[in-house]
Length: 386
Image (tube, rainbow, N blue to C red; front, top):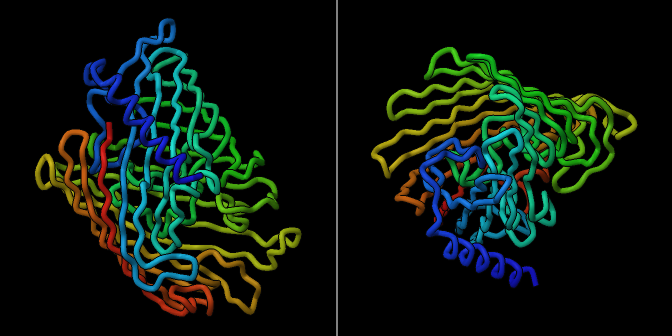
C-alpha cells in the first residue's frame, strides 16, 4: 500500500508539472526551500494567478538515491535504492500575507545512522507535509511565521537537495530539524535576528526557545550565533523526538565566507543535557564538535563539495551518563566528498563518506554485532529540481 501511494504521488507530481509548465514566471528566486548549494532551484518557477492572493509559485523536487555501505547494523542493508524525494512546494513570496507549503515523501539520510526509507519516513518523522507556515510581513524588515518551521539551529538543512552533501553530518544528528511554533524575524542593516517559541525536536510540547543572530561583516563574510534550549521537561520520545537531546540545549557559532568559486563555512557546536531524575537522567552530558563545509565551482555545471567533522561526548557508562553519540565518552570524525553536476532542472551527484568512531560503548557502533568502529558509504543521487 505504501509503495502504491508513493507511485501515485510521483505520477501526480509529474502530471501537475506537465500541465502547468507553459505558465512560467519571470526569473524570481524563491524564498523556500533554503539552499546552501551547489544545487539551485529552477530560476523560472511555475506561477499561478491566485486572484486576490496574487501569484503563487509551484516548484518541487523529484530525486532518487542509491548507496552501498560497509558494516550495516541489524535492520539496515548493505545496498539501498529509494525514491528519496517526491515533493511539491507552494509559496507566495510577496505582500503582507505570504505562505509556504511543502508536501510529499522524503528520506533524510545522515552519517552514522541507519537509513529510513521514504515509504516510512513521513509516518515516523514529520508527516507528508513536513513544513508549512504562514508568514505575516507588515514591513520589509519584519515578519512573523507560524506553523511547521525549519529549525534555526545548525549549519545544514533538513532535505538532501538543500545541502552541499547528500547526507547530513554527525553534528546535524544532534540538532532539531522541524519544529512547530512561531518565529519573529527582524533585520537592520547587516544584522539579522530571529526568535522562535516552538516544540524543539517535534515533541508537540511548546517549551523550547530558539534564536539566531547574524552579522554580515562584509558582502562575503557573515558570523552567526545560534542557540536553542528546552525550558521545561518533555517525557515524550519517538523517532523524531530523541529524549535526551530534546531535553537539552544546543549552540552553534557559524562563519560563512564566499570568494569567487569558493564557499567555505566552518562552525563549532556545543550541546548539553542536564541531569533530571524525573526523566531517568542521573548525570549530565555534553558534546563538543567542530566542522567545516566547503564548495568549489569548477564550472557553471560542475561543482565539488566537502565536509570534515569531529565530535566528542562527555561522561562514562559507569556514572550513568546518557548516550548522546556512540556511548558516553565516545568520539567520532567524518570526511565526505561530493562532486555535483547540474544542467537546468536536472542534476546528478555522488557522495563518498567515511565515519570513524573512538571509545564506543559496546553495542553502540557499526556492524551486525555493533562492534565495528568504521563505516564507508558511497551514494548516488539524481533527479529534477523544478
